[in-house]
Image (cartoon, rainbow, N blue to C red; front, top):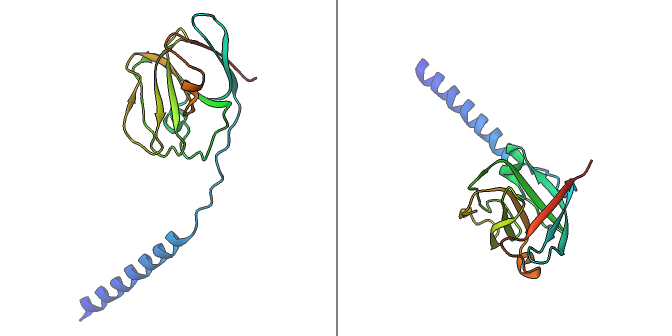
Length: 164
């Protein structure tokens, strides 16, 4: 009988804890929208003529956390904005669109700041790997359609400067 009372008290305590957890899970999580923070400027030049093609305000992703999250959870990005990923070494890099809500063009850039490869119109929330296919040190993410709009090609080059 004593074991039954202990079991009953334990069962009641477990239900109370679960009920409390259930109530907590119903509370709305308040999060602030992630907004763009200008950290630099980037220009793209045509390889053949060395003429300026486009200019962008950029956020820079260098830390492990920044490179892993990138543009995740963003609702939108202005046409003149992008994110530049800077890696410490020249390697093959692969990206995916997990938790990324906007379609993007991914431009893979070598250590000489030349476009080495690209992926057009990466679809939101798609977890398929998007490989650089060649070793690169930088990746530029822009709104989908920018590659076509500016007729960007392998060999075109970039320049960027950080804000102070």
